[in-house]
Length: 222
Image (tube, rainbow, N blue to C red; front, side, top):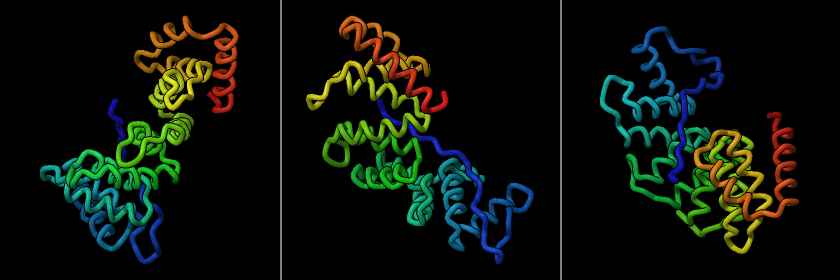
């Protein structure tokens, strides 16, 4: 399963008093304003400008290379959404030479700032051994973070990892818990996985997993 990360438009951070507080009315004027702010060093504007190049919102064809250029500028200033978009470009070679190791590094920076999509993608690279050594323990850690952040496919990934018991760490109770949660979230295929696992897990472990799932939901306010 290839990871997907979608970044939407986000509001600009408050600007210093010397700059305009908000873009002018009108699409063309607003885009010029964002570009001026980006060239002046405003990180959020740089991210938005990168999105406009990626999506072809400037009245021209999409320009992946120019998008990457602006994502990198914003990423270097610590914008997590830009870090994640740069990582995605590096992972798949969109507008830049593919570099899984660099993708892992930038996903890591965005993940540390709490961006759930980046946490999931980082976990995927760690699980698959892309861009560095395979590390299922760290993958589980980041999948759990992503699950708390609302990435439902992380629930399925956790169920699968614990069920397979890679690196000698099979835990059917944990697998059943995560698959319950994934199924409730509507993740495709998880209901069948649950039924299969129900025939392999001890009754007491299944009941404990159901309790674990209820506690997890309560802890997340769900």
